[in-house]
Image 1 (cartoon, rainbow, N blue to C red):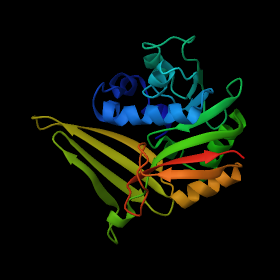
Image 2: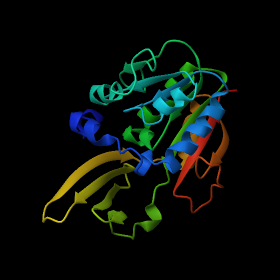
Image 3: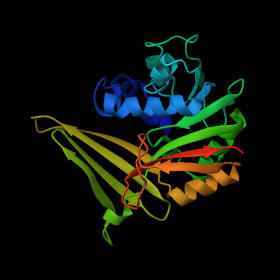
Image 4: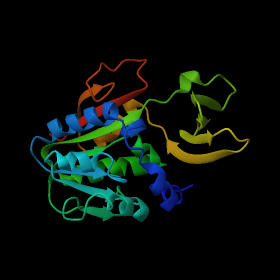
Amino acid sequence: MESNDIWDAEAARSYDTPGEGMFAPEVLGPTVDRLVELAEGGRALELAIGTGRVGVPLAERGVPVTGIELSPDMIAQLRTKVDETALPVLEGDMTAVRAPGEFRLAYLVFNTISNLLTQDQQIECFRNAARHLVPGGRFVIELWVPELRALPPGRKATVGVVEDGYILLDTYDTLKQHVVSHHFTFDGTRQARLGRSPHRYIWPSELDLMARLAGFELEPRHADWQGGEFTADSPSHVSVYRLP
C-alpha cells in the first residue's frame, strides 16, 4: 500500500469529522494555539496538509500558511474550504517539494511522518523541512510512541481501540519497524468495513538523531499540545526542533 492508494477520493470525502475525533475543539484548539505561538508572527509550512484540518484554522488566526500535499483528492477537498490565495498548496512529495520563500515554522501533525515507510525517506523529510526554514526556525512533529510493550512475545498484533462501531488492530513487523493499522467500522448488521494504513514507527531517540542529521536541535518535548510532561508512559509526543 502506498500513500496514493490510501488517500484517494473516497478517503478525502470521509476524512473530515467536524467537531469530533481529531476535529474536536479540545483536540484541534490546543494544536492551533501552540502553532500560533511557535510561528512567532512568521510564515508556516505544513507538510502533508491533507484537507486543511490544521492549516485552515491556523491561517484564520493570521498565520500565513503554505501546504505541501501528495494527494490531489485531499487538495480538492481542502479547496472546498479556502482558495489558493488564502492558502497555497503545492502537490507533491513532502520529502522533496520546495515551496517558494522562507518560513519561520514547519510542522507535521497526527503521526504523518510515519506514513513514510523507510528511514531514508523520514530523514529526507527532516532535510526538506530544514531547507525551508530561516535560522532559528522550528520544525514540529506530533507522533505516537510505538506500543511494543503491549506486544507479548510471539504475538504480532495489538488491539489499540475498542469502541462502539470501531476496532483498531495493529500488526507489527519488528524487523522493518513497520506497522499496519487495520480500522474496522461496523453497525448493527453482520457486515464490517476494513480500512488499512501502513506506517514505519520511530522511537523518540531515533527521531532526534534524524533531526541532528538535518541540522536541528531538540528544544522541548511534551506529551501533548498543552505542554504536558513527557514520560515513559506517554502514548505520544509533540517534539519541537530548532535550527541554530
